[in-house]
Image (tube, rainbow, N blue to C red; front, side, top):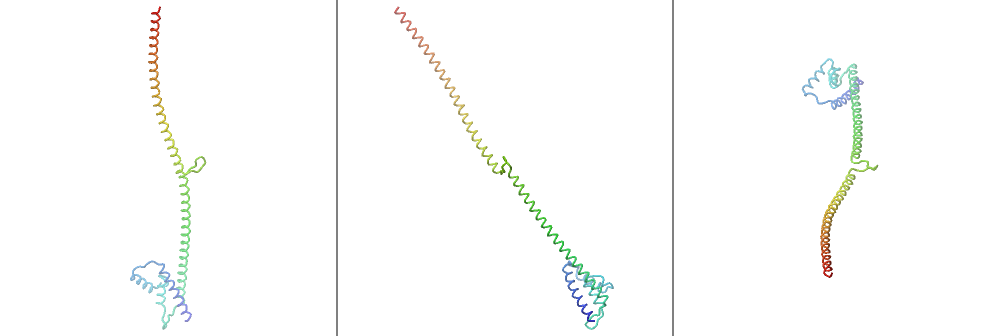
Length: 216
């Protein structure tokens, strides 16, 4: 009898532990009235040791066991059934815990892999951005900003040089036109002066000839 009592206490402790763990893992149940009806159904069912939760099985075991003052007389076969059910339930819970741990480990590994992939993509994006913002010019890696600055500086210098050249060309053209006008005017004045000189020379020759004729 003492062995049965110790065994019953042992399995009661196992039942309480398993029941607590099941309550932590199991979602919220149906309304209290429905749960109570199901518990009573398992309690009074002939298959109460084979169906329902461990709590239902212990209730059924308590129901079918005979009273002996403050003790319960439990059949060894029934105790073995409950023991086997408790062991199976604990093994199942351990298996589920191991599965959850494995899933958690896989999730951590996948997260690490994704983080590494994201870092690789970030590095590739940085490299592509650097390639986009720079290029090789005469074998020298040059940034586009510096290249654009140099190009626009050269364009500005060429524009200023072109403006100066056009201004100088226009001024030279104006000076050439004025020089041509001055040259033409000088030629006209020279022609007029030459004509007048020839006329004056002819006049002087006639006067001289007239004077010579008078003396003869």
